[in-house]
Length: 124
Image (cartoon, rainbow, N blue to C red; front, side, top):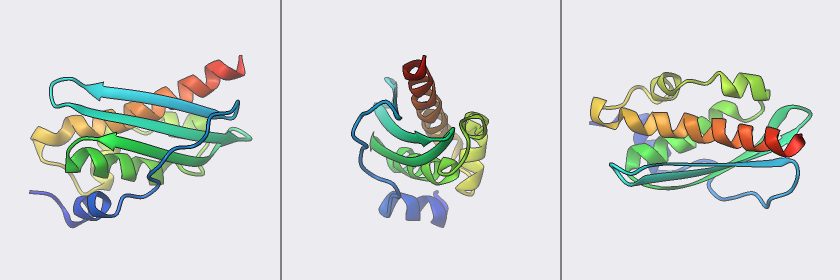
């Protein structure tokens, strides 16, 4: 049902944890009330780049795997590059997800986008 890469990111999640809040940190949280998945992402921004990113996810294996993958995809990217990451790109980077689990990739990308928006609000 899941690719080896999905299983690897589920069993060995990258960038797990949280970043203490300060003016250079943005936080985004999303959830899906239908399946119960909740994702929270922290980004630390330096010179318009995501210097560090951490996540905590309560959910299924696909939710954890997509959270882990999206952190690897955006680390080191500019905020604009990270905002351009799509839900489909996250699923594709994992070698695909079963159709019933595609909503998980939506949550992962959305959590990053919300963290960026939160950071940008703090800068105003």
